[in-house]
Amino acid sequence: MKQTRWQLEKLYTINDVKAGITTIQAALTNRPVTVTEQVERYQQVARDVEEWSDFIYCLYAEDVTRSEVHSLLEEIELVQAMVRSEAAALDTKLATVAEEDWETFVAGSPYAFFLNERRDIQSRRAPLVQEQLLQGLGVDGFQGWGQLYNQRFMALRVDLNGKQVTIGQALHEATFAPDRSARLAAAAAVDAACAKEADLFATILNRIAGFRLQSYEMRNWEQPLTELLEQNRISEASLQAMMDALDQHRDLFHAYYARKIAQAKRSTGEWHDFETSTYRSVRRVPFESAQTIVTTQFKQLHPQLGAFAENVFSKGWVDAENRPGKAEGGFCAAFPIAKESRIFMTYRDSYPDVATLAHEFGHAYHNYLLQDEPYLNQVKGTSIAETASTFMENLVLDAAIKETTEREEVLALLEVKIREGLKYASIVPGMFRFEQRFYAERQQGTVSADRLSELLQDEERLAYGPVLPEPARYKWMYISHLFNPNLAFYNIPYTIGYLLSNSLYRTIQADPSQFSTVFEAVMHDSGQATIDEIVTRHLDADPTSVAFWLEAQQPLVQAIEQYLALTESSVSVD
Image (cartoon, rainbow, N blue to C red; front, side):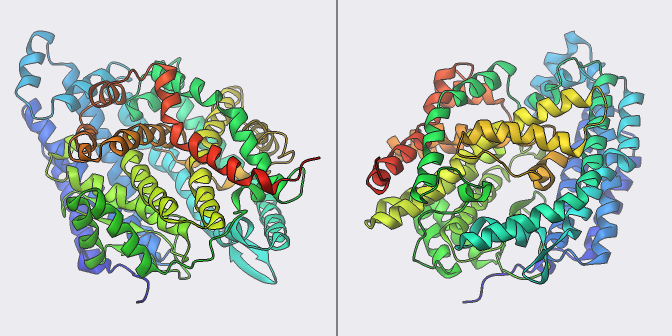
């Protein structure tokens, strides 16, 4: 069976998109009389803008060369700015409700959490005129720089083996080519291409950070993580406890990296040596097999989950085809009006691809569980959004490890699990520290490309240990999350979501019957509770304690310990 390619035209046409945008614009011209009417209008336009912006991005991702889609991207950006201004206006209106009337107002609303959250956020915002000015200026400033990054990054070409390839293709070769000399050549080619563009990308990153910092100054924020904490619905105490807990396993993480290098008979490595697999599965996993693996494991955990997977595959909601012209990476798009999702990735017949497929299915199932809620109760914090996805990824990988008896195959699968886990528990926290240092220096002026490289290399050395003396110099250029104008410090949410998912996963492993109670309750509350509330309410733990986040690392710790035990005999002893 040929790898699937979605057919977006069965969902909407470009004319539908244009009509949808017109509907949003018309709705925003109406003048609501009461606060309740203003809330309902905001819910409508926020829902609609997600529907059409996600669809437009799907159109772009399936073929980045379509010029007609580029104009739609610009048009929806303007509409998104209008909706953000509407949010600011709503927040201001909510703040005017007298304290003695507030409890009655909230008690009669189905959006109590949303309303209380917005009223709290408004207390940390600038006056309405200034907030709306920020949104307006952001279209050609903040958002414009983010759009320029996407365009320039997608256009970046690398000279490799006499051919011009995309930066994504070159990075894939540097990371996954089985021959080390091919990886070295690809990595050198990536460095050469990035060196030519480093100053431009440094300018883009500085402008995004500069605009963000100016908006924080306008709001009189002394804590630069305020927006991050709001977007992730997590307390500063819980975030700090998590970071402290991650530091406590650094020696074990270093031991894993050292073992990988030692097995290759080297004392140190290049950055790509840690990404590539020391053990490679001999099994090709065609897309048809991936469908069977995902559906079977989902069905064994819960019939509803299995039926959902079957429905997604049968309706062709997945674009997994490996073809030129696609965007890099993977994502799951949500369509709250249609009550559907679409999964995008490039499938290359490997177990890591199966894990990615399961990951995106987790997002889709999360959307499915929330689809009958009012839209304002579907809006998730950025970190909790990664919980279901990582859960499903772990489910599929652990099942494969348990079913495998051959040592090399077990090690190949363990490497996939460990590589993903360390990305969240070690590499991403380093990226977060890099961003904090960068923003601190950006407050004093622009930060050069060379200095950006130095800052990130410092954090990479801390993450990998002495076996990586020379980290990738231009990694900051191809971590797109650093350039996201809408989500502040958009790396660490993945770590929060990963560890929360691990805690939830251990709970369900101990008692699978709790999937339909604890798991689905967490997903249901993801749009109506903070991380702190969810952990306390459903996992019976204290998120401000280091102990909770240490326990959440156990699936990764156990996988590393199993890997070290299985490979001990393969390392020569002096």
